[in-house]
Image (tube, rainbow, N blue to C red; front, top):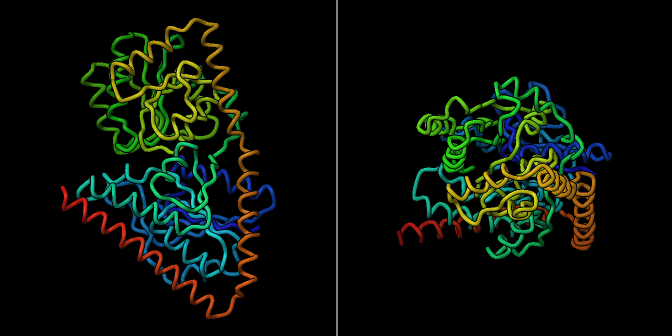
Length: 425
């Protein structure tokens, strides 16, 4: 099967979405399928990449780390050359997502869309009325999902949410899997030593993009209160992003800067070692649909303290594999970290075993097979329709017109929501 992955973000960015595209692509290729990835140009991307098509883009859009594609009518078809996709898989509902719909129409193949994110939680990168923009983005992503032939939801809670929002396209829960055994062992002690963290310290860790949509300000306030309370506690942060300055500022204000460790971006064995250097993983993002770092932490047997949210509630079980808090409350977060710290040896062992059991539900092999089964079923159904209707030049033109009309209609509907909410405000 020829699979065309189309995404607004990819390596060298190292977030959950980028990892999802990478992991699935690798697994599909290992099973004999050909995968081509279409993504914008990025600073620092390798000069030579196999089966990756980079398209022109505006770098560091509005001060973020993201690129935004420039329109290239007809250019992508030329870049694809002899590659004829059987499935087009879109990972965003706008920019390259629009192009994905056009490509699917051009080649008369099904369009799959993974609803990776709660996109409305990222509108702080855009100028304008935040509440109105949130409603605009919700309407845009919901409408785009209804233009696809199949929607993948990374978790049950997200599947429920987008259905409530009006997604009528068939939804299948396909989370991002991971190779669980790769996280079984890690040089945690060596990582602590490298970061200047004592072997007997209690380490609260976090790995991910350090950005407002990850709720880093609240998380830092809560964890620094815990660190201030416990002289042997440390806060270990892995990743980078625009919230780095505010994190340092909060730690300084609470007087715990000397026990804050910001180790930057880590990958491979170093990332696994970082997880094994932690006693607990702290998480407060409200924008996740799955949170790949949560399953990675569980695979390393690290319990999690998190605030209830989509995706999070699907994996964190309160007082089983961590603590799940009903709402954002710094004192409650500190108390939850205290609860983890106070567990006896046998209790900690039981919690760590529960973490590993949860991670086992995300073993990559099974999830990849489910995704391929969905592709195959969709392709077969679409093939029956294609043979019944035919594929004349007029049919192709009609499909392209319908695709453009669908995009315009979706944008118009979302824009009306934007204007309506703006006027009400």
